[in-house]
Length: 542
Image (cartoon, rainbow, N blue to C red; front, side):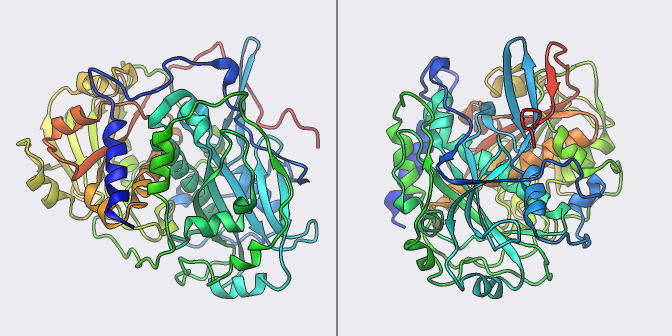
């Protein structure tokens, strides 16, 4: 792709930074009467109901992060439904007075959910194969096209065994309604959260989610029928990524590409269903259209990511034996923390060790790329660990590269014998964490906060679409932290609002070589007793 695309992306990123003296451009107020519908439907498409049973695969939470094989659950319509329940489905409803809103397994900025799920499935006894959209509200598949004869066996031969395809797409208007021009960032963070959720759900069933990092956006659009679509205003779905879910993984590498010319099978298909209109009116943000075009992904032939030497062996302390499925459903975002409570150092170390890149364990086993994101921790209340700034080097070059490039003279004292963790500065940094996160108290009243610092400009110069992937990586890390917090009796919260360059100033970052892309905070939640929790699918009668 041309250098013009790179310059467009870099210009977008600079234009959408928050500063102490001004925020990135947004609507400035919430037009609640015009809030986009959080649920997409394809009106006229055949609905295939999925089971609503509460029986989920056995397995303790720690199994999600193990490389050991799990029992492989057979592929059928019921197990596809379980896979979607554990990844993209509803987790609960909340109610306060007359107001009611749904929560999902995969978190989203502002609970706005721009991410949609689509599947391409083989023929089952209960339903014909084809291209489907997943409706989380109704927990059903909307069948949009039948598969052409003879296409499935070559697909399984190409990927080395049985499985199916799952794709993620994004509707930017759902986020820009509230967040304006910065929404492109948040939508890609949400895609990363959803990708990690798919990886964990597959793992729990003994399957393996493999992101097809070589697939191009136009290929995905063709497979899903988007090239034939007339979208309602503000309702365009843009392709994020596509995965092959191996239901009998062999341990051998899976091709990162779709079969050559396979999309030609789909170009002539007839697709059913018309996407619903999400809002009565739409506010246009041209800068999002521009960066979306600049960051489109062509078909590529990616190199294997290999094993990253920064990945230490998993720690065996602070194990969690609770059901993985229970924790997936219980995940929530905190809105307030109790500043009078702390966590132990063993809990902190166990949590952050899960964020390290390991090629053979979820969620980073999906095969995107080697890590580009390092973690800057603002440690506040961790028993046995001095308050201060710490850096976890997920990128194998982080220690040497960042120490040389960043201008602040920190100590860089090793802080753990098994992980690439350095103490940069011992200090009370609660105020700094709060101030840098748009003055949000939750970043300072927590046990710790984190800024995700990505290796930036050189990656985008190499491949402009990598801009999206950096946010996906941050979202995947965020999903790990969400689950880790929930598993250990505390709670996490993603923070998309932060002052970009003041974070860089803290570290002495003077150019675009590294950039902060996502903040997160973890602590003991203060529960809102005014809220009522209802079961995820209490509204359905099956």
